[in-house]
Structures are given as structure tokens and as C-alpha cells.
Amino acid sequence: MNRFSYARPGSVADALREVSSSPAAKIIAGGTNLVDLMKYNVERPTHLVDVSRLPGLKAIEETQEGGLRIGALVSNTSAAYDERVKERYPLLSSAILAGATAQLRNAATTGGNLLQRTRCYYFYDAAVPCNKREPGTGCPAKDGVNRIHAILGTSEKCIATHPSDMAVALAALEAVVRVAGPNGERSIPMAEFHRLPGDTPEKDTNLGADEIILAVELPEARFTKNYTYLKLRDRLSYAFALVSVAAALEMDGDKVAEARIALGGVAHKPWRVPEAEKMLRGKAPDREVFEAVAERILQGAQGYGENDFKIELARRSVIRALSQAAAGTPQSQTDKRIQ
Amino acid sequence: MADLELPTRQGHAPDASLPRGLPGEIPITLTINGERRELHVRPWTTLLDLLREDISLYGTKKGCDHGQCGACTVLLDGERINSCLALAVTKDGCEVTTIEGLAAKDGALHPMQEAFIEHDAFQCGYCTPGQICSAVGLLKEGHARTREEIREMMSGNLCRCGAYTNIVDAIEDVLAKEAAK
Image 1: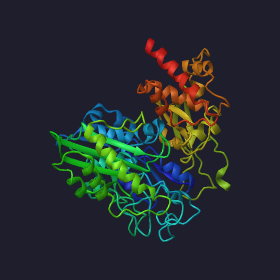
Image 2: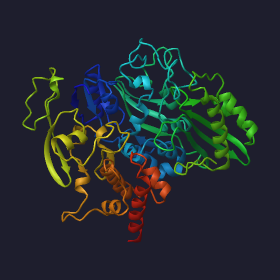
Image 3: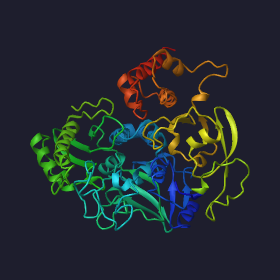
Image 4: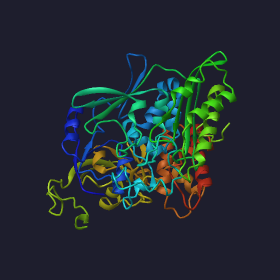
């Protein structure tokens, strides 16, 4: 680990000042990803700004719009087991519990979860080129070991995926990220929070270098009955998704009124295709429709060799997730048998 | 690297081997196994390294040092975490419980320690302190009831000897005894 100075600001304003004080300053909260990356020399901050004690960011509160505001410092455990989250956003609770381990969820925060970096093997190995870690050096993953890599929204520069489960559920639920910067606060919809790699894969998100996350805000509760978070991975627990699907349906009798579908493990951000979701409107939830929706979501999907299987896996996962959601039988995150 | 000598706990003098502008040691307070300690740490020292190298509490083990194996699990303010991924300076003011702090003052073992012995829930023993601290955390959380739930909630603790069946037996036993109280 490289050497760095350390500050523990007492207010958001002080934290913003500290972050801007050095070009290589980094914010630390739970540290579960950052400390790991520092041990691999992937992250080499010169100044660490410890935001873990900032006041007011550890609460889960009602919003004026009837939704819920989850403070940036709320742990993944606290968010997943919060009674209001479980009752009103069970998809989010399920997705959080599908990720990591009890130890990591206890330490990891809501804000940090969104800002965690890819688990691409090449990104993690400081001895090899990587456009995300060192822009312009190349992407060995495209022609290399890429079983875990993206099939949608990739670029010549980068085929990494975003590893979060929580973010996939937040994308499906159309949450908004509240951030503070030198010019005040602003909101970033989840759909725009994470980026596609394009020509600048070093940028994972649209959060400014001088901004910090304050909270994630969920809109009024929907999709409390017909939802699922289906996660497929190489072992049954504590593994990142090869493919995951957050599916949420609002039923009107025996027809689908509204649908939200977000995929994890397949792209540089949670993958949503609103046109595909609209295809479900007014339709009976049957397999034929689900197949068409899955085809539409995976339109343009491209494998890079080892991850070719993900295209078919994702197609089938979408169909299965929609079936689970329609039946009101969400995937258990304990009993891993897929019904 | 010249600046890798073990930190001393004497004073705050800037270390000449460090690049300019970097801090020496930062004073923090930790309550470790019930004992309040005033410590001086460098910001890059993990809680795991502090426990082992500075305080000589060797019960907490370093396995992967990357949060993947759980051997370094300790209880921080009662919640289980990976001490290898926690910078000690960020835990200023917290209470830490390690495997050395689970037994009662009179030496009576924690029920989870008893159960691990009773069920032969280890072979080489390297992962055991982390397994037991993790299981004590699980007990307090109260989310696991069935074997399946125990297995899922213990997935952050690897055992290369493969003592999993007996580890789950031990935890199930303690859960059942707690429930019967």
C-alpha cells in the first residue's frame, strides 16, 4: 500500500474541501473495496478523506414524495434488513443480500457500493495494461480471459462490468442519487449515474471528482408483490454475478401494467432497455412475450470468447426472472434452487 | 522499502523515511476486548495488522488479506467485519472483540467456542478464530435459523480443511440452545 495523509472532516462542506485539496485524494467510508484496491496498488491515493462519521448520512428517512431516502453511510446490512425497505422495496433488500458476505455488508456503505470498481482481472493486476486503470495502455481482456466480462455496451477500450447487485435493483426501481459538490446539491437518476466505457473507461460514473454522494432516494413504493432478483454465478454464495436480473412487474388483473427490468454482470452499468419493458404493457405474462422481451434486451449483445455463453444465459435469465416476478415467487437468496 | 520498519508507539514525531507532508502516527482510542487503549497508528495500518503486530493479539488470523477468506473476522461494536479491510485509524473510538475476548473473565469459554470443540468443527484451526467470531456475529444478528441460512450467512468464512458440516452443526446447536432459553 502506498503512503498517504489522512483527514476526518466533520461536515460535508469540510469533506468537499478536503477532496478538492489534492488531485489524488480519495474518499473512504467502509473501505471494503478501496482498501483492497490499495493493497493491489490499483488505487494510490495521496490523501484519504474519511467520511464515515459525517453527520446526517447514516439515516433511512421518508421523503416528501412518499419515498425513502437511504443515507450514503447506511451499511448494506442496515439497508437490506430495514423494515421499510423490506416491505416497500423488497427487490432492493433481496439484491443487497445476494451480494458479498455478512462481514462485507456490515462494513460496506450505500454510497460506496455504487462507487465500487470493476472486478476485471486485468484492472486488478497492476502489472498488465488496462485502459480503465491506466488510460491508453490497452485492454487485454478483449482477447484474453474474459468469462466474467460484458456483452452489452462495450467499447474498443473496455469490456469491464459493474459488479454491484444493489445498483441493479436501484436501476430497476428508478432511484435517484443525491450528491453534493462545490456548487451545491444535485440529483442524478440511476440510469445516468454509471456510464458506458466509450473512450474514457477510467470514468465509471458521472459523479464529479469534486462531488460526494449524500443519499439514494427511492420513489414511492411500487413492485412490492411481483418482483425478483435472480443472480447466476460460479458458486452459490459470495461470488459476483455472471448474469443477474432485477425484474419488477405491476399487474392489472391478469395483465402486466408496467415493467422494469435491469441486468447486472453484463455491462459497465446496470442494463435497462425501456423499449423492451414497454413490450410487456397490457400483455398477459406468458412465455412467448417474455422471450420477445429477452430478445429485445439482448439485441446487439456481443461475446468475446469465454463470455459468449452469457448471451444465452442472460436471455434465459430474463425469461426465468419475468416468470418468477409474474408468479409472485421471488428468488430466495438462501435457497438457491431456481424455480 | 525503507519505510516498512514496525511502527513504534512512542510519540508523534514525523518519520524521516516518509515523503514530505505525510503524517507520522495518529493518536486513536480503541477498546479491545474490554480494555481501553490509547494507540498511535499510521493511516495505512489495517486493524488486522494493528491487532497482530502492535498489540500481539495473534488469535485473529491473516489469510488472504483481501476480504475473501474471513480468517481475520472480528467484532466491531458487536458487528462482524473483515479486519484486513479496515484501516485502524478509521475505527477510532470503536470497540473491538477478537477471539481472545470471547471467553468470560474466569476463563469459561463462550458457548460458541464450546460448541466448536463439542462438534469437532475444525481441523487445522487456522480459520477457526474467524469462524467463531463470525458465528458470534451471526448469532447476534438473528437472521439465520435453518442450516441453509447458516450456510449462506457464513459464506464469508472459508475452511480449506472442509470442516463446514461440523461448523454448521456447532452453530445450529448454539442457535437451538439460545432459542430454548
